[in-house]
Image (cartoon, rainbow, N blue to C red; front, side, top):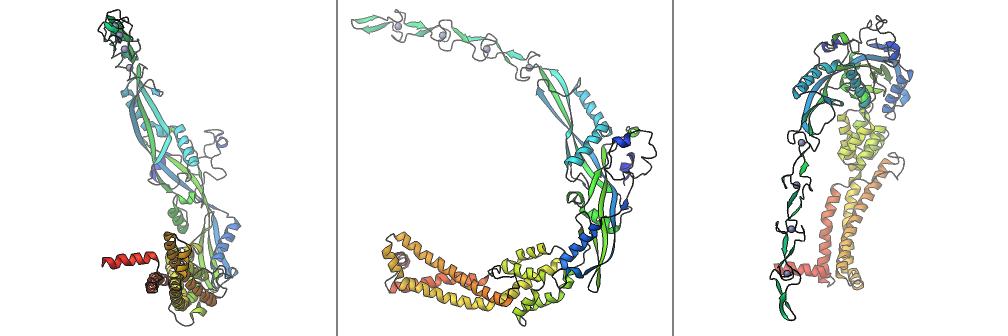
Length: 582
Ligand SMILES: [Zn+2]
Ligand SMILES: [Zn+2]
Ligand SMILES: [Zn+2]
Ligand SMILES: [Zn+2]
């Protein structure tokens, strides 16, 4: 363990707890510290479940089974294992951040008499907070219970501690409103009333009947306006001759709410001290076997998140007597349990060794078992790929090995990359990636060798058939019959295009069926135990060539139909356009 953790009660120190039972009577029982694990022990190895070894053997057997050997041919020679318990530590370096803002009103928080006092308090907290038992406990609990990785193995990725913040406040009387919460209305200057906007303070409107002329045209000629009695003016309809109206902003109050303090008369200088944690990790490797320790190192947080091991946080009280020290971190100590075992086994005459690790019983240092077992059949597959000897017979022999059978099936179905991926998925261990690449390539080529002849034959038959179909369609009057039955010219064009598309699709399937037939002949029912599952072979270049040739044949048939006077309207138009342009 690093020196940084030395100011903690060292959980590796066996005397720490039993030596001072009187110091805190009852503390042992009050705290279920390690849930069944010996919290005082350092690295230790205890018995391992006998099922663990069986599980490992079963996994190895599953890998080799069907690849020239039976699972039972894997014979255990020696097993030595146990459940390893070791101590680990995640150190959390605190990072402090203060957010500052002014808010209206009195916001809740720890109140202090001045911003300066707050700054001082924050500085003090940054020193003190890692020494507070409640904070340590809170952080440890959060890490252990809220995070899937329990903080184990973390190094350098910032952890947010969202619950761990303190708000400090300083209340200040609002300067804008002199702590009154309101200010004089700007529109009416505190009067509460403003000049009438309709009569502009005159109190009178121009008479709407005489339009201010005092007289109107009556039945007996010019007469005095009866509406304004000859005054030419009437009372202002808005202010009723009061000349003033209510202030539209303050509605007679003469004041408005202070916008700085929102009427609260006080403002809050608000400081939030936030804390993030930067973790660094180490574990006690001293008594752990190298191979096991290396795996633990490599896995990092995956050791816990992927379920290889079980970790328990050791909740311990802070050592108070050292709380005067400068310190800006806390630690999360763990006890970790992980089963492991070295298994030696024999397949045939050869002896192998593999490390079984973790509660998932993962296999480490597994030799390239399949590379070895499949050496001869892989060679045979390569010969089939190179078109040497009886390819069909060689493929049949290869297909008797589970892994190669899968490879042949994957190669017949998918493009190379996807096929290799599938092989890797089916054989995640025991086969080198290089070998997977090789097998994929060989299988692909070997299958192509099988289907080459039928593909070629199919290709020529397809061309002949396409020529026949297009010829019969345009020249022998079928197109004419359809044209007569369907007067819509666009539908006629659609049918003509459909004939091209359907014929080409039919040609693809013809070649595919012929290749598939050949594959079936070559592979028998070994591949997947039935014809139904035998996939349609890939066409590759043949499909490309057919796609180029089909429109050519189509055009030839059309051109022939021009001379027989059975050509479709659209072709004649197209032809006219092209020849006209030339
Ligand atoms: Zn104010
Ligand atoms: Zn006003
Ligand atoms: Zn009037
Ligand atoms: Zn008025």
